[in-house]
Every structure is written in structure tokens, then in C-alpha cells.
Length: 304
Image (cartoon, rainbow, N blue to C red; front, side):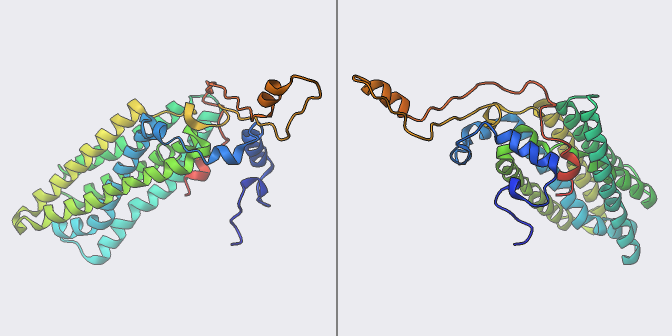
């Protein structure tokens, strides 16, 4: 009730630069309220960049669910460790990931703002390094027999995965700032990955004898690694950091006459009828430069 406002432009603690960005994005849209109610569902649901975000979310939820729910059990059953030891080993990789999420956002924003690379390249690079390194580490765990090596691989893999947050998770704002909430909501269906990961781990572990437990864990890590590799490939091919044609603003403008226009001469019926109609003018102009985006958004959205 205290922190939420109906319109970002009316927020009392909105910075000057942020306020100017909101105003600039909506300054040419006089029928903004009407236009924002029209969600281009067909374009969104047929957009490959949107599906790239969804795949990234699916992969992320798969590995996170597996590590959070199954990692303690893995150290207990494979390496026969105590609860106290397991608690420490399970927490460290995620602490490292949290640090990488913040630092990764700063690095990616600097790469974009300094024009070292485009937004598209920055997003793909973040996803590829983050999930790619994690997939390699998860696959390597299959071949280690020492808990120290497994712990080190988890620290490296989970830590680097934080960099991927600067890829798919902030990508909706690149594609369509006006419909970022819609795209983000669709991406939340990636939670299906967490459900499937948990079910897969449950059946894979409980349907084997105690002697086959280590092999069951290896199969789980192999499946998780291949899912991550597939996600990296899909995102690298189909992801984009450019504003999409269906984003609505500022690639399209809507102008309406607010007052009827009258004429005072004979025979003006057709002219008056046309002038009184709301005039909608749309430009099929799509932003070419990846830099025509909102400011340093990665650092902020990485914390969400």
C-alpha cells in the first residue's frame, strides 16, 4: 500500500533519468490507456525470442529444483556425510551464485552501455556462459568419486549460473517494455521444469536398490546437463535483445483527435465525417539499434 503506485511516472521516489525514460516512451501515445489493453497474443505466442526466454526459465527451474531439493540427499547417500557438513556444502554454491548475479548485471550493463557488444550479443553471451559452464560442471560430477571435487564443481557451476540471469530473466524488457509483464508471466510457466525435475529425481532414486543409488544420481546429473546444453543452444539461436515489431511503443504511435472538428460551409458532410473520426497512425518502424532501450536495467531486474 505504501510502495506501490498506479503509474511509474507518479512514483515520488522515481529518479529523474527513470522518469524521463517513462515519459519519452509514452510521449507520442495519446491513446495509451486504450492501446495497452490490446495485448498482441498471437504475435507473442508465435515469437521465437519469447520461447527462448521460456526455455531459459525451464532449464533454470529444472537445475535449481534438483540442487535445492536433492543435493543434500546426494551428499548423504553417495558420500555418507553428516547433516552439519551437508548444510554447509549445500549453502556455499548458492551464496556464490547470488554474488555473481549482482556482479554479472554490472558487467553486462557496462558492455552494452560502452557499446562493446549489442544487447542481443550480451544476453546470449550471459546465457551461454552461465548455463554452459553449469552444464559442463554438472556433467563432470558424474565422473568424480571424491566429495571435494563434487563440491568444487557445484560451486563453479552454480556460481556461474548466476550470470545467466542477465540473459533470459531481463530479456522481456528488451523485447517489449510495454508487455514485459505478459512475457514474464508466460516465462513463469518454466516452473514446469521444477515439477518435472522433482518427479524425475523421486522416481529415479526410489525405483532402484541401494546398490544402484550412485548410478541413479549419475543419470540424474546427465539428464540435467543435457537439458542445460539444449537450453543454451536454443537461446543462442532464437534469443534477441531488439525491440520486437509487436512491442507497441515506441515502434508504433497512436494519435486521436480529442475534440470534434467543425466546418461552417455548405457541402462539408463528408469532410466533417472524416475529420471527426479518431485517426490512428501507426508506423511500422522497428528500432534498429540495440542501444535504443531502457537504461541499465540488468542490475535492477537481477534482484527480482
